[in-house]
Length: 375
Image 1 (cartoon, rainbow, N blue to C red):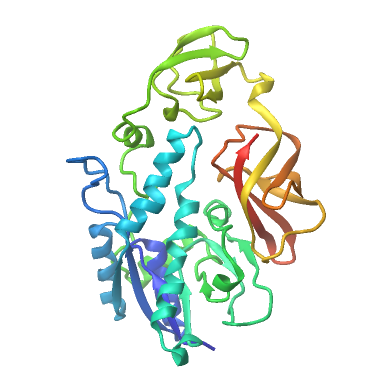
Image 2: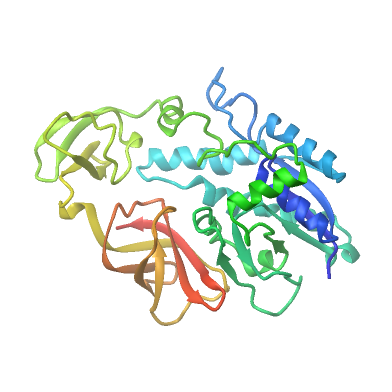
């Protein structure tokens, strides 16, 4: 069994406990901190301090934990790649009228590329002796085996409220056979208690926000960067002009707050028409424009590595906090798939992901997912 485990250390409670648990189990643990974000965001000239995590303060916390555990910590400076592949991706998405998910993209293009980088620098003899771990709330095979021919599977975490499978559906067989998720079998309160019992210096550290690189809120972050957004008319689904919007990038489908339309509502964002710079809103909860049953997905990943040949029924989550709904998936063409929900779903938003699950003997299994192209 491999005995060296590189742990992605964020400076937070979860990854710190993951490292400590692996150390207790006898693995040779090595910490890696991936620095994604500068102290001052230089995307905006002379910019504001929008940092929240993955910065120098988080790096110091990771070092404190590693010193406490007596394990080495190496630092990978990924700020340039993160800016190009995640932050600019995030901004381009809003500019193009969609609502992108930066966490999915970060995991796909940056965070788990750590595996390839470290393996590429290891000798051939060392490679089979190396594993990787993170502090994500998710479960997979307890002891994956590198270069194994067995199917690697992924399951939701014990703590359903903290489960992060929605953001990790881009995992592949080659990555999963090298990965361990030590905290997936525990709840967040259990992890907090362990951190305090272990005496970890970050045991009482607060949670990071949902979009980790945004310190305050998404609207403020976008406002400072999307200078080409133009005001335009707001119309109802029946064509009645009811107000003015501040720029289409600042709204997302299903949004209710922040429309400033006064009485007569409630109003919900139903459509963004980029060609005419028009924001379409639905009045009331029962407007049929708020719900759809079918979406087309692009960039679909199947964790098994093989797409089903025939339509299959799954439990589908079209956003992170969604409880899951029965749906059928079938191939649309060589690249894309169609998801048809049994019942209409609200706010099926281009740029967000739909993630597929099924019941299994080990709990809900993650099958894969893809990005909503259109509804």
